[in-house]
Image 1 (tube, rainbow, N blue to C red):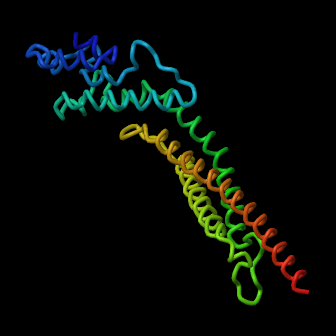
Image 2: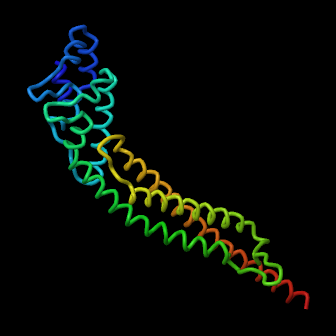
Image 3: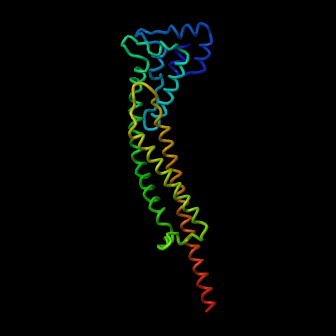
Length: 238
């Protein structure tokens, strides 16, 4: 039952078997013909293989790593570094068995990050320039925006600043994915969360950039109405 639970990734079945006295002894004394203990067996790919393409490979690595760490809690520390007949520790077996998944995850992450990082750089450039070229321009003598009397200016500047900051954050997030390296030991499932954080930041940046455009458009229309009214008052006073 313990072996079936490990091979088929059945956490509830493993817990049930482990809670039995015989289950604890079986898990601790488990060995196969190659000298693999229970943790070595967990490090191997499951009976039903995962989808190893694109983002599916990334989530597969996360699920496998979580299962591997879950089994570690049931076993004593000495078994974590135990070697099998071929001189491999459980971590080394995990890396060898999941190398294709990890490679596919890395290729997908870097390819996607490279594309999105270009969009981040473009938004950073646009919003930085927009911050110093506000709609209506700036008074050369005072250095104050000419449309300061329009209340939407504060909304424009706020959205511009938020878009600039979040686009910069997403760029550094994608940059961390591009420079990420994978080791034979240690956590390997950080990439999807880094990508999720970077894409979320980019989405916020795009949304606030659109809001900034709307505020700028409203400001221009209000300024036109303001000038028309001022011109009308001037004609009536003449």
